[in-house]
Image 1 (cartoon, rainbow, N blue to C red):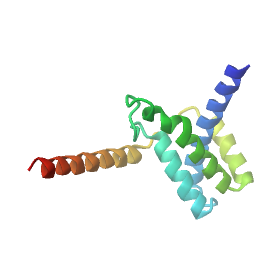
Image 2: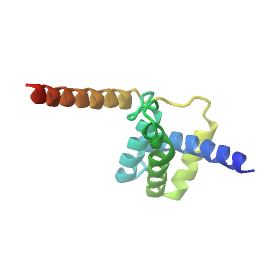
Image 3: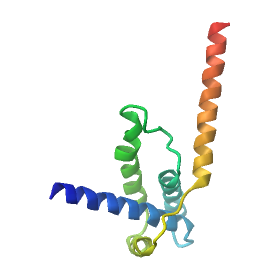
Image 4: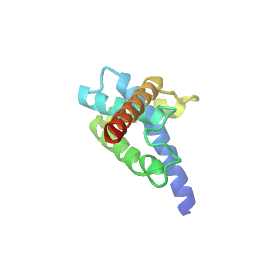
Amino acid sequence: MLVERAKQWARNLKRDVVALWIAARDPRTPWYAKAAAGAVAAYALSPIDLIPDFIPVLGYLDELVVLPIGIALAVRLIPSDLMAEYRREAASRKVRPRSLIAALIIILIWTLVLFVLTYCVYQYVR
């Protein structure tokens, strides 16, 4: 019973991510909801995690805590009638979209972090 509820919750989250991706592209979505939906969907659909899963505890923190909170917030910002429409459309899609732009942004963030760390180590060692 509990396992089945968890599976259904995960399926709903996946559907809502696609629905948010659709909402971010629909002109009927308010701009603030569009921004939140786009950011959450881009991160969730990115093939690269901001916090890689091999990092103990933190690696799964974004998938288990941060992402569901972001999805819930973005869903609340979208008018309920539009969200119901987006959910129906998302459920009917066979292929889940991917966000390559978000992947590039994440690569840029990690590059910047590595640059700053390298600079700090260089200044310390010098």
